Amino acid sequence: MKSPLPCVFDHPNHADITTRLPSEWAPWPRDDSSVNHHVLSTSKTPSRFKKNKLRWPKRPVVFISDPHADAEAFEASLIAAGVAERKKKAALGQLTLTKKGRRTDIIVGGDCLDKGPSNLTLLRSVKQLYKLKARVTLLAGNHDLRLLMGLLALARKKDIGNQHFFVRMGKKVVPLFREVFDEYLADTKWDKKIPDEDTCRTLLFPGDDWFKEFPFHAAGFLTVEGIDREVRKMASKNHSFEKHCLAAGLSLRQVYATSLKCQQLFLHKKGEFNWFFRKMALVAKRGSFLFLHAGLDDSMAQMLLKNGTQYANKAFHRNLKRRDLFSFYYSSIANTFRTKYRDADLPLTARGVDAIHKAGIHVVVQGHINRQQGQRVAIKKGLVHVEADITLDSHSRKVEGLDSYGIGATLIDKTTGIVGLSCDYPTAKVMSANELKGIYE
Image: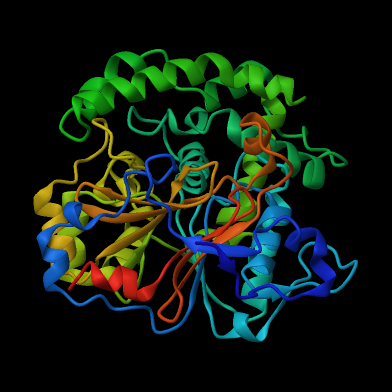
């Protein structure tokens, strides 16, 4: 039954945002006609759930994932969640924290980059939260790390394990390159020390022997399905990457020059966005809730059980510094921001789920899998997942037939429970603390 929604966004300057949001809440849908028809049910709940006490985060949590370079959607979602506000006519990047925002954990679930329309503005919006001393946790997303792998691979000696990482970024990184070129290089003598087009192609693309040698190089690291998927994906991207660059008005010389500029911006100590990868975490645990971008596998489950989230985050950063990019990107650590529990991904079995429960983790909150009708709660691999990627960026929304930019956030608090707020669903979905607690008793 619908009820009035307690106002979490009471800002008169933001009628354009509030009018697009639901004004009522209803229990999280479970009927067969809803998009959540196979979600949480006691009959599906693993027995261990009922033996362990569910612990809620000490502070309220706002989880916003997959903004994909849409600063307007990201900031609107912060405002909708009640943690930020913006003075009338203020530009993007000029948010201030509300009273609620100062006492709330804001977790950005990864995939800040790619697709567009505003990669650089989105990064500056996230940085603004740090400047405001908000309680921000920035998680690693697969799109974010793909950029890092591409930039690092270009800076290192080519080998079979790393020479495909630049082109592997694919067409979705092209808007970022376009933005960087226009802002930093267009009015400079960018081409002064840049080699010719053919040399740039050789520097950026994998060699002719890659497709023959990679399956042997990856044997033992990836599943058979994973190797086949990687080779097929690269065949497509190798064929189309240059075409996508040219369609955006970028020659390979310009792409190469832009990549060097991105190395300076993201990797050098004085680079404007040096903070981005440095502040990034792999996982965050609040009470019995684990926040990450994608999912888990058995090895990561064991790591979290034996060593905890702090160790996992340190391992993530130490592995990023290794020279062998291949062993990092196809490891259990990287699987955490890439998996969709496909045959090609590292497996999560009953053994891993048991370890996760023993580690005191009962709910995984993730991005990565975009939903068109708001958040979804589901049992996957015997583990409760809150799928919180609600298609925020205007690029994806246009492709999927959705209007404008997206607005929404997942709110987690022991007083109200789990709230799924989205402009694409008629009510706010609420799973009360008592309702979720009842599963464990």
